[in-house]
Image (cartoon, rainbow, N blue to C red; front, side):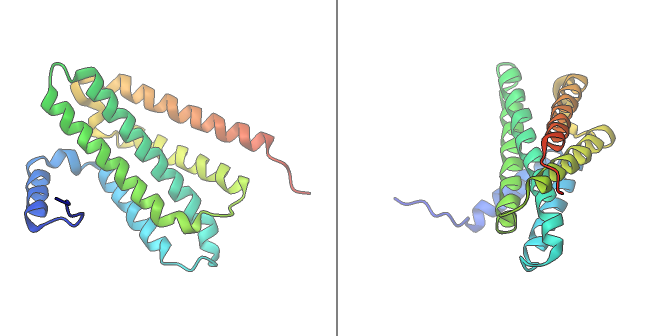
Length: 182
């Protein structure tokens, strides 16, 4: 039998019950911020491709979503691998949440994809730098709640800031080696 890709009313009711039963998995500073990014991606996708704003906004928004999606999946995987033996239900729930965040970011990038073609190297360097600055401020000011899963807040915050520092170094290196306009 072929499974339908369209969710049924029961599927949607089950999802709503799950979200309402586990609100801290879905309603956090990261989720609210990323939902804002997705709404921004949808709004940007409605702007004509030739609009000047597209050259400026689309690449940084895409990079913000890349960092969010990859970071969420890495953290969810770390939680699953590290703690699954002792607390399988909680780690599987966190993993499902991380996969959901990754898919949300992928959807935002997919919406933006028509606006990401033919962008200069400099545009992508700046986009990466903007994403690093945004996520560094986010990690410091609005530390995502699942960083603290099982008391690992300081380790995960340090790892996230280390990864963001590496992203900043990549931007700096690429900026320095970029061909200069004459």
